[in-house]
Amino acid sequence: MSAGSALELADIQYRIGAARILTDVSLRIAPGEIVCLIGPNGAGKTTLMNVITGTVQPQSGSITWQGRDVTRHGPHHRSRLGLGRTFQTSYLFDQLTLLENVALGAGGPHASGFRGLLGIGANARHLREQAGESLEMVGLGAKAHQRVSSLSHAERRKVEIAISLVSGADMVLLDEPMAGVSAEDVPDLVELIQRLATPTTSVMLVEHHMDVVLQLAHRLVVLHHGEVLAEGHPDDVMNNREVQTAYMGEEL
Ligand SMILES: Nc1ncnc2c1ncn2[C@@H]1O[C@H](COP(=O)(O)OP(=O)(O)OP(=O)(O)O)[C@@H](O)[C@H]1O
Image 1: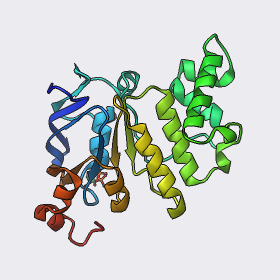
Image 2 (image 1 turned 90 degrees about the vertical axis):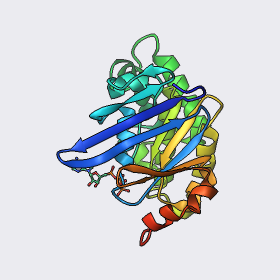
Image 3 (image 1 turned 135 degrees about the vertical axis):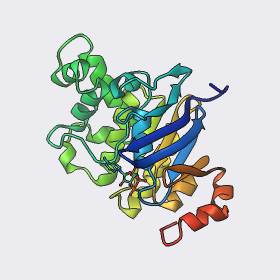
Image 4 (image 1 turned 90 degrees about the horizontal axis):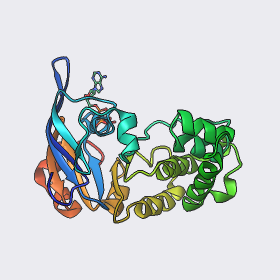
């Protein structure tokens, strides 16, 4: 692995039948970096996020996380190693409170999460305290005991981010975090995502709203037909003629 990389993908190939979904994808993400993955519809962005979390297994290529080869590790194992999960569709439990959702998410949907939720076991109080702190961090401390069903889209996103924080992720993966979020809530969520990136925590996100992308990204990676078309500083990438051509007819 190259010095300074938290995550490194090398020559990822992923096919479904004869369809080449990802071809020769290589990229590196440094600790503390915010990387935005962009590209036209169907470019392979969500699939690439799934390759990183381990829900999709590439036919070849390697994934190195903090110096360890995790290519054959499943999603739970990667999550335990601090490689966070993606959230595209909301999976929160509407009838549970924010605190219960975060406590459940903290331990994963298995043993420690359920014990935290039910208040069973020595770790339960600790887990609920952590969940409370995490909700404070995302600005939802005052709503900890409300049901998730009462929240706006933006607040749901924040709960998901709180879960990511409490599970100790060193990389937070966000798939379209602004989807469904009303315009007035966007600045707040942008600011929260900026705060997620610390010297040890990186953020990778897929986002279609270019104004959000340009506020957040330290670096852009452009996927097109499953290949990396360009990567680098946002200004350079946006001025790249190949990128502009790839986006013809698409929202840029
Ligand atoms: N299970 C599947 N079976 C067949 N084709 C699939 C499957 N999953 C993804 N694809 C195809 O792989 C390609 C990449 O899909 P993916 O969802 O990763 O793109 P995307 O860049 O995230 O798109 P969008 O911006 O529309 O969300 C698309 O052509 C899609 O139709």
